[in-house]
View 1: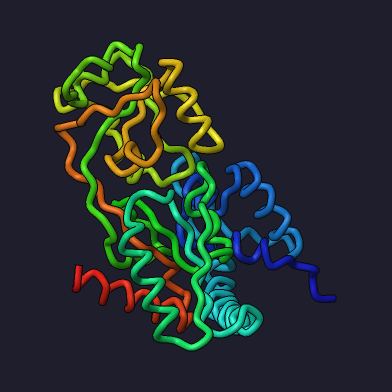
View 2: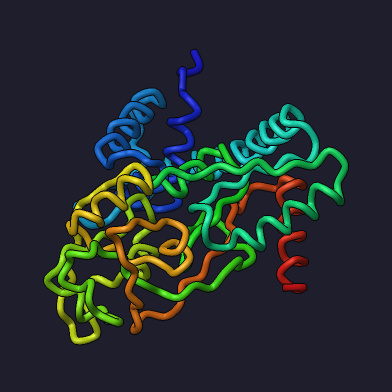
Length: 301
């Protein structure tokens, strides 16, 4: 009998075969490393007990059986995904593009003009906007719930292609008015040492590091706190109480204001760029057409 292998198990195997690292695979899949290991063991049992990976404390590599399975499964699943995406596109109607937003601050001017032009140029075209979860910025894209996502850079992920840059924004830190840094005219990363600093959750390591480096130029460690929040209102509440330092950008600080929160220029970090990004294996014509419209708008800005 054919084993009852689930598609999620197949996708997990393919991601792990690409990453050869349980932690990175877990991050891409939005799972814990223990769940990745557990699902892999179940898949190996379903496929006759053959080991698909050699696993040591330091190295993960494909076995012969694993390499053979990957060579056959990868193109098969890619073909299945193309069929499903075309069926999904037909269900959504022609020219529908779903875009996930960081927030409604950075890059919105360019995006608004692009939406207006896209819906005017293409009959039946529509752009659907949604805000991505605070602690799962790339999850909706990887789950194909959206076609494009606005993201901060740098973003160096094997499955994601970075598209046009929408904005370049100066850096600030947001703190409560009673915070020791609140009276400063500007700060550097050196000034953040000894304070509780929040870095974004649910983003790749390179993006978190660019938001605020783990060490200052002189080598001192910055203290990051585990302060997950669900939305901007909760973040502003924590800032107003003086509990956090929040490195961010000028448009965010201007858009999300609170009477007890101030924004201070952070002068030793370069400006932060915001761009559109999509999955590399997504060949949706509506997505590509909208990206081209965005690039046209940027040329006339």
